[in-house]
Image (tube, rainbow, N blue to C red; front, side, top):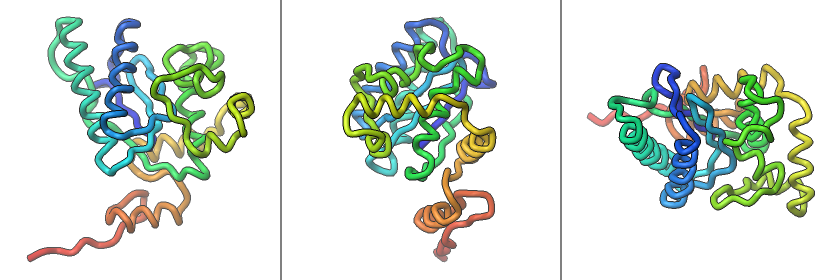
Length: 217
């Protein structure tokens, strides 16, 4: 799943280095509690991106609920503020792994570059790029199976991964990821979308409806 959570009215969510550290620490803890493997992440000033695989259908929701609550309480206490911080419920999309997982890795870790904050993702501290591209250790990042297929050892995998960042993502692919995530759709081909729609019994893409639900009288 690719997940994005924004600050209310696109307002700032992270004010200091300690805020980023607090969020990451609790992300690591709660991902373990709720059985979610985190593959990539990026904390921007006013929003958050995560790429993760939950072990159960409710895992991602429980993770984001617990993480959001902890972080809001911390921010309100630290900065003596009240009220909401997040813009409602997080947005997400189910990702077709064979075609789009590595694209999501790149989309997430290139966020600071697209925002004009840095020239290269390695220059931005608050992402998983250094773990995924440079082999830095992490207490909670779990490589996706597709990532592991990049090479037979850490050196080859990180080299191949860095090569993916030699050019920008295609604008059409960026739009597809954004549309799928903001719409809570699936990110994948039409066959994949139809399979997910039928499995969930609900619409997962524009124009692709799931299996009709039975009405109980």
